[in-house]
Image (cartoon, rainbow, N blue to C red; front, side, top):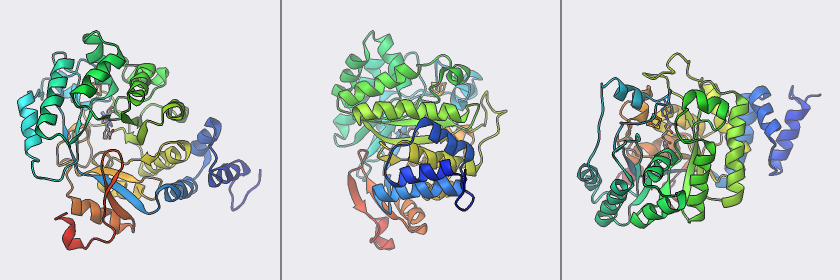
Length: 379
Ligand code: V47
Ligand code: SF4
């Protein structure tokens, strides 16, 4: 076991594989979590990111609709359902109210609406199909990225449809892609402890695989930094990597840092920034078939999102406009998550990267690396 500048031979072997563009094994992924320094994984991840995307950092212009925080499930990490259970705060929106939100963006160059919320027992498949149709009738070109596999699993079962039938029904109504939520930790040992009653790993993966086969893309997440061990993170990413080998349907992987305010897991300390950056870097190294790695700034905070750009991340999501509550309720420092395009561009430029506005499917809309500051807000 020798060393080059104090680095063990097994780590050096991993570095050689990564530099040669080869896939690392589960054991090697685990070794990176357990033994490698932040500098080591960071520089490998950055090399991969540069190879894939150069200096480009992607963002989009989007807003969120959260139809309800009422939820039939009781995930222990969720600050949404906790508040609802205590009857402190609960909302349910009608189709008209949600359409009103969409209309607020008339004339603005928004390209995506992201719809996700709790699983309300009365909001069924037909309700959501009607919502999608109403949005498309008003603004046909707006990309609708909607509902997690958890929401689908519940609404399809209630409608007595299988996954393919249910997804086809919603695609006909206007669904364009699927966000990555609800994945949490796939391994049953952990899943049973943090979200026992919702769709399991196989159910989550089946919904995404079916969506990919029907021609729509999706994202994938991991909820890390609570009771899981490194081996559970690797197990989670292995299942995603295997599915991606079969379908190529995932756009981006989004590690979500567990936030501990006002939920049944509040006794757990949140992960350190070093641990967060390691998670990003190792995800970039392990998930060699995922084109993009996203840092979701409303959850991570904008400074740490900026830092993540040196640890394999090439995407920092969108403008958001204060429309998501999931993270502010769970304790993120971003209590009113909203960034204008010029703020996002400045954040990316500050670390000498090229800001590129994208659509949901990563088609480039505008490269801001040469745009004068004064023009950014207008464009
Ligand atoms: O599945 C809930 C997470 C997810 C907490 O696809 C928490 O582009 C941390 O998936 N601490 C929903 N995380 C959000 C989501 C997402 C977000 C942004 C972009 C995309 C995308 C998807 O939020 C849930 C859960 O994993 N979450 N509570 C918490 N206390
Ligand atoms: Fe419901 Fe989602 Fe919260 Fe779980 S994480 S309780 S499914 S809103």
